[in-house]
Image (tube, rainbow, N blue to C red; front, top):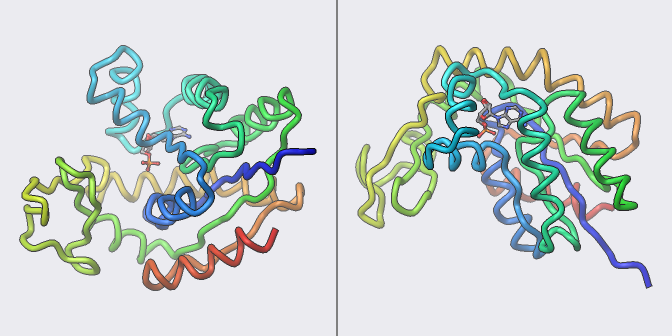
Length: 219
Ligand code: AMP
């Protein structure tokens, strides 16, 4: 009997809510969340050669070279917990990355089932990203305006809140430009494959959650 796999991609501009939505999807489906942004931030924190290389690009809001992230993801997909599926969040971001992912999956007789594209306008994204704060202790994500923490710099767990370097306004604008130039062409790429589901990413996290559930469950 064939095993059911959930090979999913969550696509969208920075601030669209990929991380927030990814968290409940992976819990509901019992699959790992693979976030290249989180993997690169962890490498940067650990001060590995890869982390130091990535830091230059990340701080400027530019994309880390394809071969670096493709290598990282290909290795991760071969781990045992991905056998029943995975949710990629923040990867692919360029056509060469998407092609490399297709090739890697094909080698294992697999294919993407669903690509959920969260759609949000640029001004909303800037507001969302500039107010975003992450707890350094428990990693909970807050928003100064939409999901206010108990204090501007403190989490309920007692940890300190931090703003990501790349969530400063000038860098946000650059990340959005990079998204429109390099990542948005993936929508047509996946549309041609018949796997694209466009989801309105505006509104509250709960509203978006209902739309994402429909998109993921509808396959
Ligand atoms: P994120 O947390 O997904 O917004 O990613 C933060 C930063 O990490 C991005 O602005 C890029 O510099 C880098 N990054 C994450 N994923 C990728 C990827 N798939 N390709 C290239 N760079 C990436």
